[in-house]
Length: 492
Picture 1 (cartoon, rainbow, N blue to C red):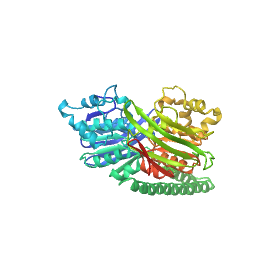
Picture 2: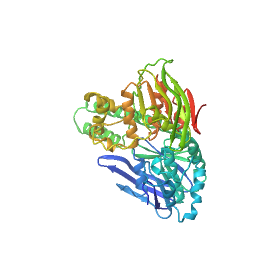
Picture 3: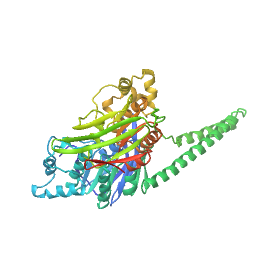
């Protein structure tokens, strides 16, 4: 069995009944029921940290169940977790290990072609692949094992747009149940039959795609809030009644009236309706004032190769104040390499990179690696921002970190979504003139993506954005588009 992908024996019908999961004193979900069967394509959504990946792990037996049951017997399930690692070996040897014999290697080549895997090289070391290429290898590994049920955690992360479109077409042809965790709204619109949301410790089922889910969710929120208002009106009436009853003179009638009013208030408390509160990042404003004519970044005839492999040649680009540029292209085209060259993290073979005078650059890397630091969130934030101790907690709370997490959780314990939120807290604290964002939307839940879209849209500085999330790009106020493909940079 290879790290990062597993095949389990289960049934074509997966049923969860009265399922509860708790960690210490925190309940992720309580007494939820679900059924995955037939050829349903279902998306599991919810805020970062609500328990989506935990539910996946419970289904495949990698996480204990607090209470309840999951029924599973029979066929094979393929599972790709959100994060995975590769051994130190070549692509071809790794994938060959998925086959019954070497004569089936044509299946590898066929899948590479279907995935539109640019420059697929079986002799390339796995560790040297781009993040998108690694995801494609992982998808190939899954498909080679011919599962009959799929569980995939964030399938579109790191896939390029062509890869996402291929994956959309491919999974529509599969005659099996598929459960996916995804926050790619365009992807959800294009492929799913249902959306399950973990909300308020329960599992709510919506029929249809993302747009339908969004519409129905707003109706449900209105219903919750109407129920809350009706409850509070009733409570006010009962408390007024209790106050009036207490004015009655002593006696059996008074005691009985008080007891009745208290009993009705107790029933109301037992069936208590909560007001819906949208827990999203607040006041995420990235501040700067840059004149529109100011030169921010210029590339002149930039070229880069790895050995005999040419990545790109003679690239030219110029960014001015206020420009918001979307850089896209297939996996392996060199987008991240180009970004690293701009940031001075990668050398160039020839050409020139010029950054404008007195420009402060903020860089968000698509690879938010696990940090083994034992520092608390607060300590790491103070170290990287020089923020005052007393101000750090209130600032981090805007990014949905609880006081308990801020003081007690170490950086190494953060989930991918939490790590991304932490980086945006640092971004927001510092006043950058130029933001270079390499896949900033990966691992973020939908509500956080919407906040980030608004922040980029309102930002007065310059942005170079690398993203494969079409919905995210469309809402981020992009002013121009560059396509890096076949070693050339083209305006679109």
